Amino acid sequence: MKLPEDVRQTLVRRFQSKHREWLIGDTGESQWPLEVPLGLPTEQAALRQVDGVRAWVNAWQGWQGVGTLSWCDRRWKALGVQRLPEKLALRGPEDVAMWIGESARWERAQSRYRALIARWPVLAQQLPRYFDVLADYSDADYQRLTEMLDWIASHPYSNLYPRQLPVSGLDSKWLDGRKGLLTDLVAAIQEDSSSEVDFYQRCGLKAPPLLVRMRVLDPALRAQVGGVGDITAPVDDLAGLSWPVSHVFIVENLQTGLAMSDMPGAVVFMRLGYNVDVLARLPWLARARCIYWGDLDTHGFAILHRARSYIPELQSVLMDEDTLLQHKALWVDESAQHPATELTLLTEQEQQLYRDLKQQRWGQNVRLEQERIDWAAAWSVLQRTLGSKATDPQWLPADGGT
Image (cartoon, rainbow, N blue to C red; front, side, top):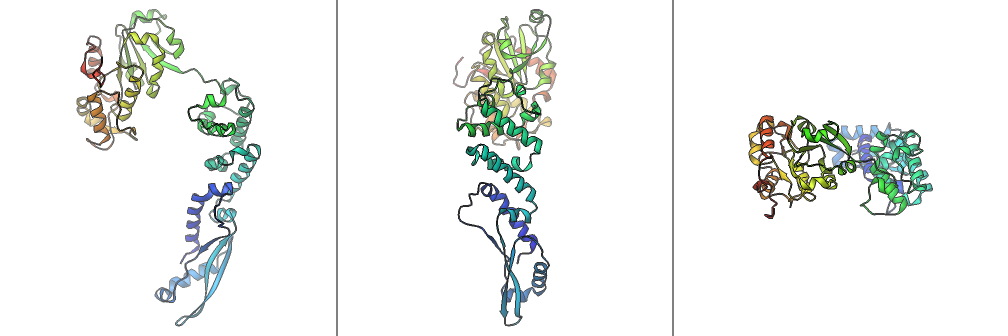
């Protein structure tokens, strides 16, 4: 026996699973009116719970709401003729939305959906994926979105920076959270399903230059750039430098790079993450010995793997089992591990440690952040790399190459 609250919960689940189809109007087999059986009891069941049946009937007798409630008569031997609520019929999505308190969201989403497909019919199948955008965006955000789509559709190759677009209220913060949405909708408008095109290419916009942060650890090298030791610049500008750099350190965390002291012939790049591939655009880096030190977790090894596809002889330091186990008291959880089972560009030892982390050998999603490693010990290791030989087995490629 379903009480009004039970029906509401049923309709909440139905709305959550079907609202996108309802928005398109693609309901498959006819389901309207939607009939919700209220669970008529048998006489035997009613006899076992007379008070419950009475409360159920009273609840529906006092119910006032949207939909058509149907009643039926039951002639029972022991209980006589009983008039019972049988089913509730709802005419369409609007009734369901009203039942569960979603009327305003449904009406707003439906109105905006119709307006957008009137402008761009090709969006009919794509927009329901963004039901929450249609239902929940403020009027200002919705207007900004439509103006962006309209301007980009009319100017597909503007080659302007995003902030140059004549769209009211457009700012970087607003745009940064909506690049995926805009890329997807513009692709649908252009009827181009290619997934290899990023936001800027898709919208015909100019990407801001990629800035890279580098510290110059050698005083002699700093003298060549006016004594500046901490440089944040477009990667293409750094590519134009011609320096006698002998060692390039790549560290994952900013404070690790900031803590490093003077080292002859050395520079350190900080906080590149998965953007390590930009270093392949620095020709002078190919003449240097490159050392990577990342967090001891699966993503740290994934970044190392990615970097080696551009810098094959990249050496890793402090990314071994001994370092991990020596700092057990400082472990934290890695929120989500990298999905790959194997990373082919890791050395045999690195690959084994990566597998052990993936297989939870020491616990659930173990992670050692690089800045937690004892700095005196870490700095000693980094200094020793200046004099170590290129035959160090820790950084030979997995296939045994040099």
